[in-house]
Image (cartoon, rainbow, N blue to C red):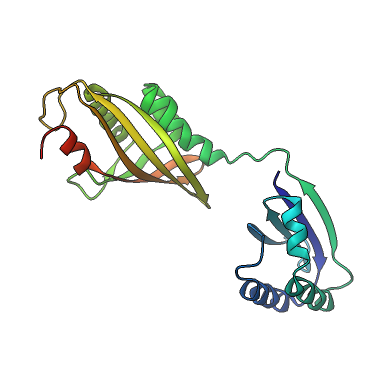
Length: 230
């Protein structure tokens, strides 16, 4: 179970606190168990700060707290604060990564499930598409997705296996394995009935809850070999 620690403190010397965190990150390389750190400043009170520190589990957080570097940096941090920082320990009971869920929805519900009506729900109208299989460097419009999906669905009965997914800020990256049976014309190749597979990576950039830009990289050469085109 993920574990989060919230550190609440006041200081007029935040630059010093920030420098201490840089030191801690450097000195705990290969030893720390922290997976995510956010430092926030209170808009209504300039000297009030809140740090949110995420760990894979409570046990990993305790291991991190026992590092001599952690103890030393904390003592120096206290010296820069107005009073003792307060700590709140939280077991994470719900963690909704909404952009990641939307990205998965594209692959499962739209691409495989065929609900093309949902394209406009999750893609921006001025979506920008970058596709390794396209002759254009980029294309604009959510209709690009509808056109390409229609072409793939007419040519193959396929599924996607999402092997890995990583979210970073507004970006969601997915590593996937595609499997499909060639049932219709594709790139001028008549239906062969071949069962084909390929791997690929998609990066979606989100804006305002919708997919604003996408990059598609996949092993098209492998697919063409399986279809007997090479």
